[in-house]
Length: 593
Image (cartoon, rainbow, N blue to C red; front, side, top):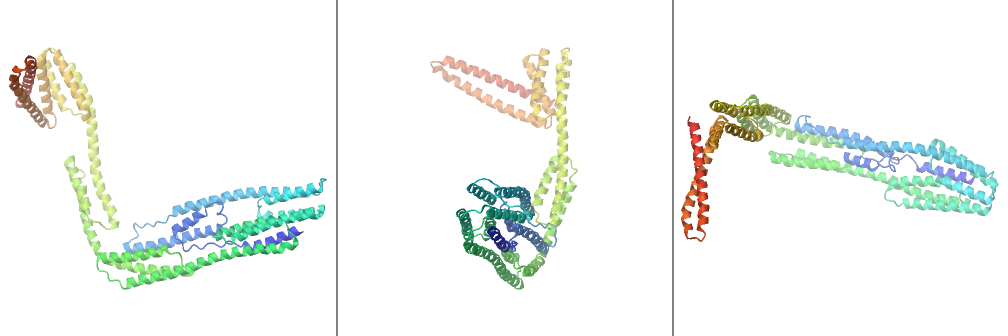
């Protein structure tokens, strides 16, 4: 029964070592640091070992979130006079996401562990049954004992079972092992060999426990130590004279790891005490600043505010003080901060007067913009709106509670006008698009004018030309339609057997009449005249140069060829001059009629 006794001793120490894991005191952490701490446990290896730590973090996070939100809200109200616009950056969504992953891991672990433990329980009972059957084996002693050793090794490799089943299965196992030893009356040599192997395995566990005693990560070392105790429990007995010394060695290493674990949390408590001292110093600094405050200018207030903000920054960089003093020291610091910002609020009350003047100015701009919403002189009104918007940008700030409301009112008035303008332009565009079909019909009518009598045909063409000029179309369609109009008109003139020159003159006359009927038609005709006169001057200069230079070619060896070329260019220039003068005459006749 040595195996059973050794196992009971292992369980006794286990109960001493595996006391409930103390939760890490995370009072020194900011909200973001608590999220990072939770993230550090978000693995299957750590999520169960640090279950209490995780729940402690969650509790502290929401406690600190409420405390800091309330404090920040008080400071904001003290400075702005209202809670409107208050926002506190808590990163709560990030915390919930990380904690959600932790819970998912726990659920996975529970399901997997339950399945694994059920399978392990079956394996253990199968092994027990096989050991029981060994006592009925007809095989030789050596083979029977070899099978027994194999089953022992298999037992050690089987994982844990549910706590409710653990004790019973172990007791059954040790009972069958003891019965096996009694049954086989194994010889001393084989038994000593078995005891030696158990001894070597437990020495190896002692060495691992001693290595953990010097580990830097004491929390992890403590968790690893629990696994070593589980392994110790699975190893069989050693010689009686070695048992106590071996156990004492393992227990000594265990004590060192436990001590390091306890010291770690003692140091956390020490850090809290140091934080209390530092926070007390910050309280004294801000109290002195408030009591000696003599700021009379914006610059002085800005400098004093920077000092207070720096003290608040230092405060936030510190962790929690001991729980009993933490609330009191925070309230002491908050009280001085509130006093400072109350004094600052009083000083800046004059700034409110300027903001009220700006508010009156912006209200006037809103009223002006609203009064213009129904105007239909789109171009002029749009320019005035641009000026109003520029003026708005020059007006200074107003109170935070009025700023967005006034801007929304002003923007709504501007948008109302521009939406009406856009609707008008859309309607206009639709009308212009519809006019394409009208001009298509006019082209058909021109093409269908009868050739006889010719006078009636020309009169009908003139009437349709006037109607054509009055119909406006989109810019992108204008060029193509105008080209088709010219082609259709020329085709009609050819059908009327009007000479090319006369047809050209009539087409040009129709073009000028069309231009005069368009919007800004007079300006367009004036531009046409300027263009023709510029071309006339250029052609006349070119003719003069050709006529002056022709006399120089008489002495040249190939004078005849050069003279013929120049004379051809002279005739071309004269023809161009004649055409331009004819067009100017047509324009004059149309304009003066």
